[in-house]
Length: 245
Length: 267
Image (tube, rainbow over all chains, first blue to last red; front, top):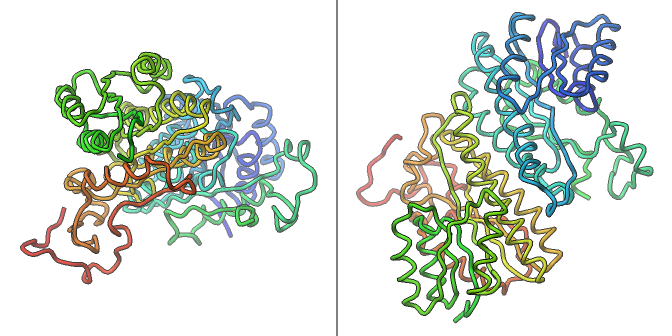
């Protein structure tokens, strides 16, 4: 599956799933804008790995809870690469705050990053994708768009909102040749998992393991490719059947 | 009477749905806390009509986007009516807007008036119910928590968020004896004005896409709420109940009923 010569923005590419996606896209020939907000060291490492493998990337810092920052990021990426073919919305906040203790500021912060930020990143790339009459927008959501988290109610609310953002934007942007699909990962080992969990129980994780960033990334690469051109408005659960157990 | 002496908190009580709910629940013996916006001129008459059924009614003006404002009102109300038994989150702010052209202000307004008020009410009123070990929370939502309209994306996003809130609250309040459910309302009389779209044909001739041919009414909704308010169906928790007459199931347009006298129309 070649993505050679394509250009992408991956938000939250300094850590975890976003990093895995940026590396996988670059490995398939995509020129990647590696976005970060606070994880500068991680993002620099992502760029280092891409360049070491002969890939091309652009490092961009932005706070995706701020529209102005988003516009600056997208315009810079488009100017640098001469357009934007792929947007992967991935940067999100998860505070794991008890429902009683959530403050209004925290509520606003999580909504602004996870929901408003996803929409405004999408809104900012539309003009560029309209020029090329094609585009791939991929929303990294969570299994918690389908089942409660039971530890972060506002995070789950944003994932429920992203489900509808994906569906609404898919039917609206189809006229421009832009597809929008959502990936809903279950538990993914991004390092922290290994430290806090024992070997997965097969009665909860039938494959005997949790997901890896590379698992999410390979699906994202398919959704970013020409091979998925008839697929839009879907939300794909990627949890090794964990939700069925 | 099935809701005798239950205390019900109704948000956006001055809306059409709020009025129908208030009147029905008053008839069923409930006492009411009617929350509405300051400029809602119809509230005094509504309160009077409810009192005529023997209901005790308190009118309040909490800003539901802020937990502290709700807490203040709860303190005021507890001295008059006691604790809240049933919360009806009835806010349904709507804006026709596209993903491509929607404004940040509009997006935030809809998110805050729908999803944030739902969250703050859950924290404040649901929290009080959890402390007491009983209560019922109902979010009056929409089929657009699942089905895109192509007309009002921020509304759909807000409903998707509230639907997940309901599932979360069914766990964290459910563990304390509180029953929580989300209702997906289907098309009412003005549905094409709100959701008609050049992007989606969903609301073209929408009445005939309802197998029974009749759009929903707020009186019907009130009847369902009245039953759910009794708490008799304890196994109903964390559910998303679709109240659309089967509208979303329609597929073959030519098989749909054509009401007498209705012509084909395009939105």
